[in-house]
Length: 116
Picture 1 (tube, one colour):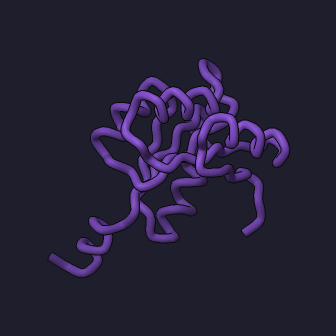
Picture 2 (cartoon, rainbow, N blue to C red):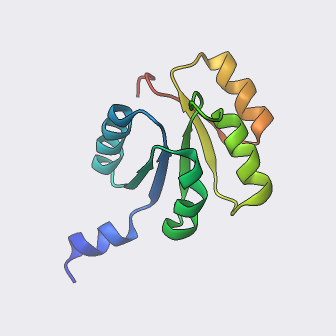
């Protein structure tokens, strides 16, 4: 096995839960370029199954999902699913995200438009 193939297999896995396909593609490219293996789901109902199958090291959950707010999805998964660090991920303000992350039990939050 080549070192490139081996490093791809060992790459930390990130699951993105976001209904916005463009946001998924942009974030995936950035994370892939940084050495992460990225999986995306657009429907919150696919999150638990994908966590079980892919075993990600981190999950980014969009705060403003249409069917269920990201903070509620994190809270439900924290109480009933496999424990995986999760971050709320959105363009919402820091104040909104910080409160929602704290309430839901998320490990923190990440702004989509944040500068590196």
